[in-house]
Amino acid sequence: SGTPGITAVTHDSPAVTPGAAFVAVSGFKNDGLRFAPGALDAGAGLVVVEREWPTAADREADPRIAELEAAGPLPVVRVRDARAALGHLAAAVNGNPSRSLRVHGITGTNGKTTTSYVLYNLLAGVLGTDKVGLSTTVEVIVDGVGRPAMRTTPEAPLVKENLRRMVEAGASDAVLETSSHGLELHRVTGVEYASAIFTNLTRDHLDIHGDMETYFQVKRQLFERTSGPRLANVDDTYGRRLAREFPGALTFGFDEAADYRIVEPTDLPLEGMQFTLDTPRHGELRLEPPLVGDYNALNVAGAVAVALESGHDPLAVVEAVKHLGQVPGRFQRIPEAAEHGFMAVVDYAHTEVGLEVVLTVARKIADMAGGRLICVYGAAGERDAAKRPLMGEVVSRIADVGIITTDDPYGEDPATIAEEVMAGADAGDTHITLDRREALLEAVAMARENDLVIACGKGDEAFQHLPSGDVDHH
Image (cartoon, rainbow, N blue to C red; front, side, top):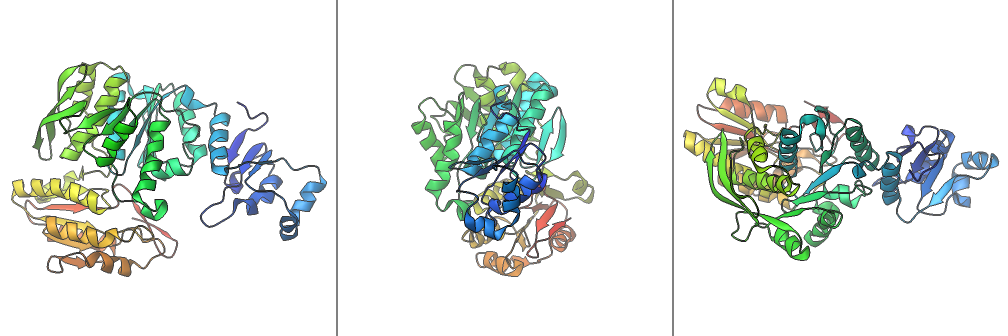
């Protein structure tokens, strides 16, 4: 494996076991080197650092270091980038699992999770559930069994461990939702990708990346790391740019110039859609996914393109598209609402662009049913605050009623966030109910026959990060 004697790797000192490598990562709040003496005490076989360690100041700050040194030289290796080292070590101790799998990466601002589920279900339909693994925001699926995920792209050791579990279960393919954080923080360093899909790029995570160009350059890394087909959404400005910058890349979209072109889409609200996909080598394929909205036509087109470019039979792919399941928390219909005469949908939309996309679809469905559109939504704390009034404006423009509530405030005051969202909304059709449970109950109580109630922001997540530092499960 290239790591003789090292049995595991972690950046979490309480997880150190004898023979493990401890990587001292500088976190957003803590310097990992503070935990190095504890890791050595626990039997770490290697400590990976970014600066000289220990110095005289380190020894003075922690008397344990001198005691450890008395037993012999400390197993310390200095590297330029501890996070990159964590990624490479994690790949090595797990037997470089991506070399035994075709790993399909999906990145972009919106549509990552849906496209990941669509591609997973397509490949599972063609190859069999036991042959495909999935890692998304929502869950990790190995051998057909799902476990909840904690973040879009898990930390490097868990990414490689999940891929190793897929290899051990006999999988040939893995679908890996790859966030900008996953790329920037080296969570996927050491993963070799067989294909890549780029969905789109809109304003999000600028609190981390600073500006759109930096954000784009991070996302672009996925195409750099991919050895096989690269698919870019040509309807998106940044997707067109990627296609130009990677001459071998293929495109998908509604645009006339798309290699995989969507034509004649028709929506059948709450049942799905039909459209023709004009393909470079297999002619026109008629697709009937049980998903709604033009944005989902794009998600399906990107996934189908990768399946076809990977050499799968077009007829088997077309058949698999018909049997796609709902994506958890992505325009997910709640069937129980129908018993009370209205429709209810849960969605993950948490930016003004995401809201515009899903509410446009929801508006169309509500209009066809002859009902109102009621939207419960909020903005996250400690994130790009400039989008808050923009979110309020979008909801007031498209929905009939907006209820602003709490959505992961983290360390910020929920009331302040809500007021900033309200600044862009129309006070005539919008009010604030900070307790999310109450806001949802209010919306349901307000719903009349044929109305559509949509809860945006949290998707399938059943918890909130509150200012107290607590995680509120609901």
